[in-house]
Length: 108
Length: 121
Image (cartoon, rainbow over all chains, first blue to last red; front, side, top):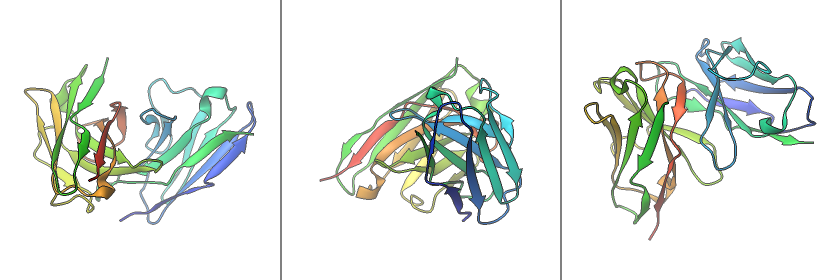
């Protein structure tokens, strides 16, 4: 099983500042990496897939990078609606698909 | 507009069974793989099971293998999760989600609102 580790667990950021979230895979997943945003009481929303491709309707302030085992989600200028929990997920063709433990982005 | 509507959740005793359904609309259902993801109260996301568009290929997490079965009825645009021998640790919100293409392993671009399953005596 591929283990996904996200860091930090919580990050405190002021509105308008940049947030950088990390995700590490225990073995290479190539570019088969997605990022999701989840707000309290809501279903997750796909932000990024193929490590760096924004999903439909996702604002340009969200960007993804990385390949292999190291990945980053950057939110360039945090808006009030961006405070949420973010999960990475690997989707190689080796089951199980696995998620990271999540990073909570909170208001500083 | 893509819509996924789960139903069938509720309270069940340990060892019991439950079947979740997910009614899909707004896209050609048979052209896409589908998946179930769960979230225990206050915890992160856990992939449960996935199925290809035709239904010929399925995979499940080891934690549910032999107890849960994923299936689909493309004539009814409906995804199912049959859950048997339920345990307390299966308590979670279960999400139905659409995979972005017809391969069981892929990013999930649309999610249902979730269905709560509580396993307790």
